[in-house]
Image 1: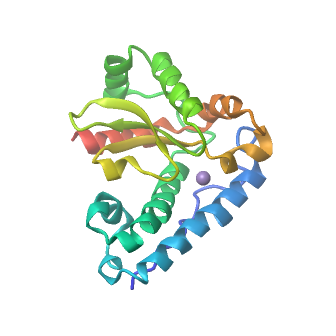
Image 2: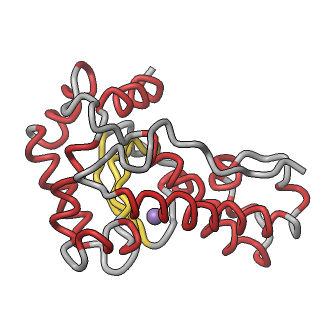
Image 3: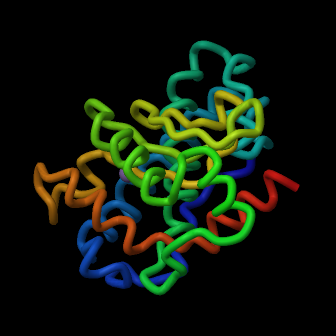
Length: 205
Ligand code: MN
């Protein structure tokens, strides 16, 4: 059986200071994300047909997964995929704004980059309880901002995520306590838009 593994980060836990603190990163990656990986592997022990599938394949085919393991794979597989996706976009020294085709599509869809950030921030703030905010490509090939509950992933809905923000309390509470809005505002400082652009380039190709 193919065991899912915690991905290594391309940076140290303190690399995103002061916007995301070292202790939050260490616990988030080594405890929370590891728990999703472990939970996914445990669920797959009861679903041999899924053992050779990638996490993306599992999440894109939830309706074909037996009900007895579907919730576990939705939560833990989603947690594994969403966090891996999240870590990849974080870089204190990345480019701070989109360029090229993606910048043009953001302007077309939302009016401007600032309007997009407002809309994304609203989705992140208004997600009640735990979940994620996303920039995705929808079924018509258009950009869309949305949020999902818990560890639900847009790929299960046939959408292509370009950027995701974890708004679970575990993502910010040690540093920001209840001030989710401050966490969201600061998070923009650690996005590497070159990563988001390369995802968009693959999707729009
Ligand atoms: Mn998280």
